[in-house]
Amino acid sequence: VQLQASGGGLVQAGESLRLSCAASGLTLRYYGMAWFRQANGKEREFVAAINWDGSSIYYSDSVKGRFTISRDNAENTIYLQMNSLKPEDTAVYYCAAYRRNYYFPSSIQIADFGSWGQGTEVTVSS
Image (cartoon, rainbow, N blue to C red; front, side, top):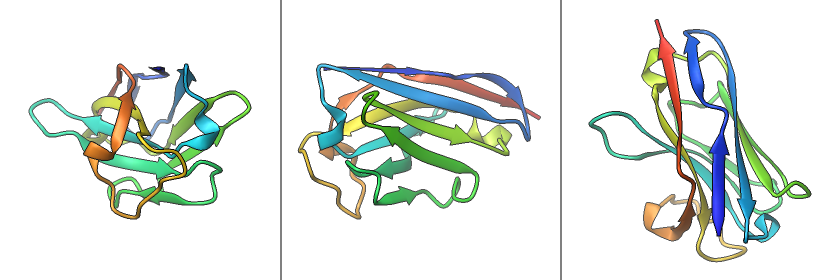
């Protein structure tokens, strides 16, 4: 299983980025997926999650209203559209797939995720 995250970069505050996470060796349409991020010196934190068919989505309070998670199961890819970026959004962003198919709890636990992408770096300057 390989998750390939891409789309990160350096932007100014207020600008947008779109992250992608393409999967190989895993049929994403059976799995809930999520984005996490980790800033320097901080723990990895949850950003957004989407269930296997896109009918259920969760966001962290810090990104709600600015970020949108979506998926294209035909392309075996998930996305994170990030608008109105802030310097505090600066982090390495990771996509992850749940260990179990058709599993999407309301409580997001890192231990429930079995596959992780390599991370893509997002830097937002003020």
